[in-house]
Image 1 (cartoon, rainbow over the protein chains, first blue to last red):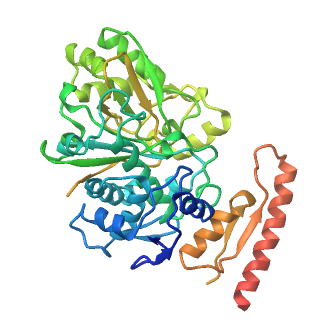
Image 2: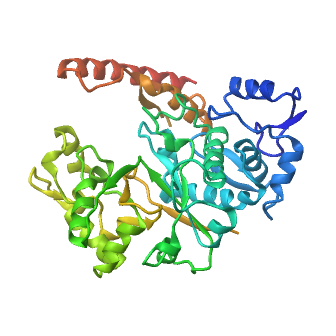
Image 3: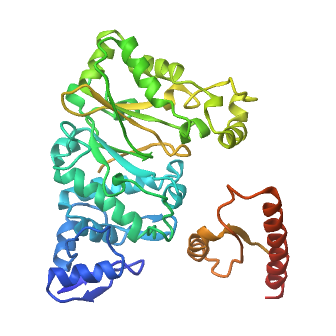
Amino acid sequence: MSLASNKVPEAAPLVEMPDDLEAVNRLFQERRWGDGLPIVPPTEARVEAMLAGTRRRRHDVIAHIAPGFGAATVERVAINAVMAGCQPEYLAALLAALDAVTDERFNLQAIQATTNPAAVWLIFNGPVARHLGINARFNCLGQGAWANATIGRALRLVLQNIGGALPGDMDRATHGQPGKFTFCCAENEPESPWAPLHVDRGFAPEASTVTVVGASGTLNMNTHAKDADDLIRAIADSMAFAASNDYWLGGQPWLILSPEHAQVLHRDGLSKQEVRVRLWRESRMAAGRMAQKDLERTRISRRAELGDIEVSTLLPISRTPEDIEFIVAGGPGTHSVYVPSFGDTRAVTRAIE
Amino acid sequence: MAALTVCSDAFTTLGRAQAKALGQPDLPLAVIPHPFGLRSRDEVRAIAETCAADIVRLVGEGSVR
């Protein structure tokens, strides 16, 4: 069997391998070309089939990926998509996500090499979610949906294999997080009372987009609050923690509101902007809650924005209310999710071809 | 122009790989021990003095090369 690998910038070389799944996986493991899970061997035939999923030319360079700055050609991305188990129709979405993470506002260099567990969270909006079967409802961050599992996995393989961010080498994450295997969902647009994320970000409702977020993790917030004031207070209180990159840097924290929580806020008359402003005000945290060393670095990092910071200063989680971002996703239930950010990163949205 | 990077020993793998990726495989690294958190002021001063000497040496080597 001939396998395409991704060692050179232009055409990927062919590597002769035994026609044996276990042997192929052993070799990929030895060469550190995987994420620890078995891969689908990227044979010439499978890579050709994958390339049918885009109109982009095979050797076009989508980006050079930090920190190793390997050239991500369409072909090399397709190889990693095969390895991850993607269907060919996912490829265009993966290429758009890759284009988004290499926008300098996302700060991929830092996200790839940091000790922070930062992962790339992919949020899909528009018709693409339905066409590809990207789960936005029950268990949308969990197992079970092929697209959620394999698109996020493929991006991770690209970032590691082409970008060179191997754990312990150039990926210096102290712990990492499960979201570094895959972290991918769609917005539950039919059950949101507000305009969807991509429309807020200037795209037409009928556009298909992917938004990338530098996410430090997820925190579940289970509350039966039945009025907006109570719910805002409980969420804002959950967002404020002393060892947070967002408070240190003035970041861009995210929330995934369940449809039930979104309905509580909407029923009580809150627009998305009003939700942002309320959360921004109510999540302010006394600077003295931070460790002394963290307070000292916050005094430096946020001086231009906030002036002198005292122990009693109420630190906003982000520079502006508009930096608090959220989508509506998930199934029935009184749970929402807080997604603290890496801090020194901004989400980027791209249209999918 | 001479250039070098100060890097703690937990991050030299990243530092060397990053320098190579950016086309500077011979970039000198002045390496200091990791971490700093529990070190006394005197220990930090000793590390700084060693590091300063390393920087002078590495810059000197770079100017000869």
